[in-house]
Length: 463
Ligand code: GLY
Ligand code: MN
Ligand code: MN
Image (tube, rainbow, N blue to C red):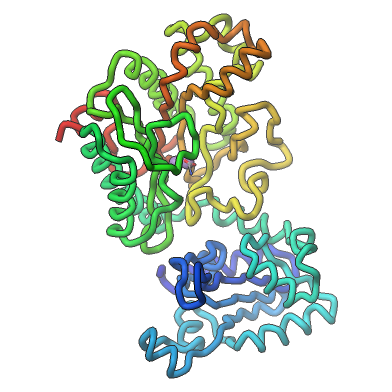
């Protein structure tokens, strides 16, 4: 955990940013996967962890905005728990560690919430994403579970987004720690991918093990596939074959729960062929453009558009696109090659704070999300500020079904050279992803550099 003061300060700021009422922050509980005692690896709720620190199941935090009182609720353990899980500090001891003096059981929490509800006070909560917590909050507030989303507090969401978007120095250190694990994961993947015939799951499994060796789980299920055109390719059943690119999109959470999110794309066997070099360098040129544009007050939607324009220009040189590329971008033609956004916020969640609702995090009143195919998938479009951590992840994909559909519709036919694109239907895809910190004057790519140029990747694969 960070020092007590970190959590005290975060809650103090929360009290300034929410006008009145009670703030209810429900931590996660253990979830069973096939019988009660056999549980999924515990994952704490990030909002709870941010304000109350503990990576422990069954806790609830409350902040009373008017009185300034702060509470930690949970059940005390009994001798049975101690026998099976070892000595456990009391709720009172835990509360003290994070600067809280008031504690109680879940029954006490019910009484506190009841008195607030029956005296008409607002109880703020952020959107729960687990059925258990939907039911728990509904029960506490005496409302039907189906109304839980309707009563979510946008004021609390705004307060959390405001604070969590700006990463402190101690948070940046944790993120860089998670990236150092991702370095091990991806450089190991590169060595393993040099051997044709290896199964994708052997590589993905080794990477997942390395995440665990770094102190935490993966930050999302590993994407490792020789079918990189499948954006979230979680199937790892194939043997890797020369001529295919592997898209490896993976990161870890570190002991403090902070994430990394890195993608590298490498040729099976360790040497790029000419076609792979061409597409790889097209994506790389877009990816390398991004850090030169990222700085405070720039909108990430504009950076996205600049990156896809750069990709489009490179694809024009290869004969895959034609016409005026600025117009092609405006018409949405780049969605064919890059149907996803350039990046998203990252922190305690790999898509940071996405449970609050993507548009509360990545957009605001001045920056409304586009509904154009491709750009609509951009999770972060608003102006950037010092302290933001975000991903830079352009890609280029040849999705046979999408090519067939657009071609049949004649979509963007003035900009897409379908005859050439047809020849790439067996290509797969390429994505390159790093994590950026917005600084006072620009940005910094976080972590130790992971091999990225063709020469660096081929050298890493030859080791
Ligand atoms: N979770 C995949 C990505 O955003 O990179
Ligand atoms: Mn990723
Ligand atoms: Mn990402």
